Image (cartoon, rainbow, N blue to C red; front, side, top):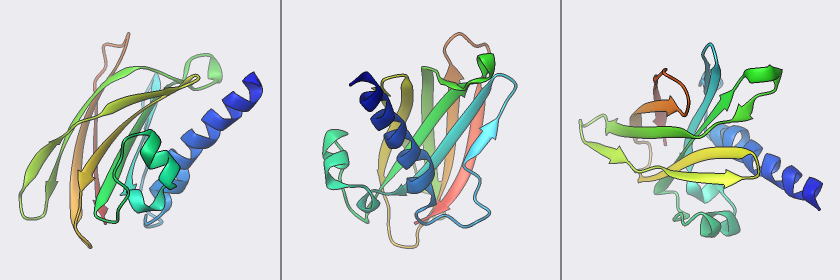
Length: 150
């Protein structure tokens, strides 16, 4: 049973980080950044691409007018990346100059740790994200900047 639960956790993490992030991503979109001790994975995608059960489980609105931002920080220690608790804050700005803060919620499933936030989006809207991450136990702060057209 433990193995099944771990496998389910990995599948959810894989879906959020790879499948979901590439649902409307261009081939050149970068969804990770590597540092000395950590790898940060990030993406944003419309929530209508998620299964209804998943959006309900995480308290998300499922719609083409809402997007989920997903951040995961992995520690590279011992050669096997491991999820690490982090302080994650961020904001966004659209092309009209409107900005707002993103509220992130920590999700833990087994050894996986990721942070999700939800924003409202318009069709064909381009959003610029500015995310600041500080992994627990580290003196480093990482700034992630990326843009996404919804």
